[in-house]
Amino acid sequence: MNDVRPIDPPIRLTELAHGGGCGCKLAPAVLQQLLVRQAGAMFPQLLVGHETADDAAVWQISDELCVIATTDFFMPIVDDPHDFGRIAATNAISDVYAMGGTPIFALAILGMPLGKLPVDVARRILDGGGAACAEAGIPVAGGHSIDTAEPIYGLAVLGTAKPEHIRRNAGAQPGDALILTKAIGVGIYANALRKGELNAEGYADMLACTTTPNRVGAMLGTRADVHAMTDVTGFGLLGHSLELARASGIRLRVEAASVPLLKQAGGLAEAGHVTGASHRNWDSYGAGVTFPEHYALSMRHLLTDPQTSGGLLVACEGAHAAALLASIRDAGCPDAAVIGRVVGGSPGVEII
Image (cartoon, rainbow, N blue to C red; front, side, top):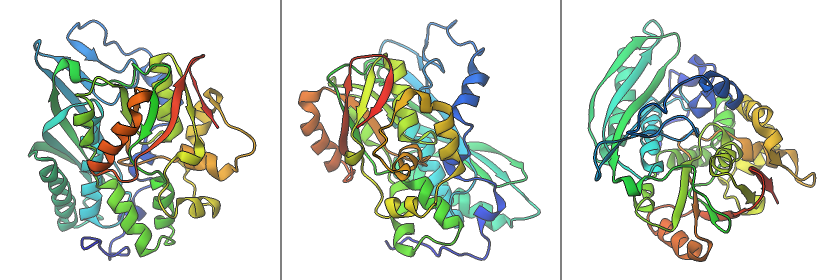
């Protein structure tokens, strides 16, 4: 890739942060405790709040229009400032696509340790974020910045959609097929990068994955055969699958061998490049997952690996899965795959 920058720049952003990317997210169990008493159901125009841990809030303005709002920010997952900005912005915009919407503008969120980083580094982060927004066809219309102990960057993003095009993480039905639009393993790659053990090819794969926008979500929202959708980020594939299962009141059966992986993810997982967030994820929701003993522990680490700017998890009519998969791949998601199906039973996730 022509835009891949050196892995070891003079200032290593990842050394200034205790975590990086969506691996910085609070563990699912902790987040649930924080949100349990938050109100949201008092407003009939609020079509989607935090009640099912969905990707963004949705407010209905009229019979023809909804506004989608989200915010996402984190500490550096890579060392190059421009790449960090691109990844963080692409990740934030994804929440609008995951709801079936189209982004319209963004506001920047920037925290910089002023005594540790020159202004030029912050400028390059903003430039990277602006480049990702330009690719999405939206402006960065403003924002807010503060002096922080660690570098932080992200966006608040607004989007729109027709009410009938909104896709929640609720709505999956028995018989649906499950499609994942991107390969997983970003957290494992990032862990190897922090340790200086990710080669140039691996960095290129990681950058390509994390900066590929999920704009296919806007198309998927227009299709009646797509019943539910969410993006896979900090809680890993299993965590976000479990959220979809619980929100929909159904059970997911995931075929581990069908889950697409970044090229070096399996080997790096076996070599021990596993994030602390992966362990926290499993501790938070492992009771809701059936994981067969014949799979190596490294497979569990892959399925709980925190993704930054990960793909979309889509539940669609089983009979239309093959045609829909072809459309998703044609739309710029070559790694997309059918990874399982929706079955009856109590909410949960089965790995087979």
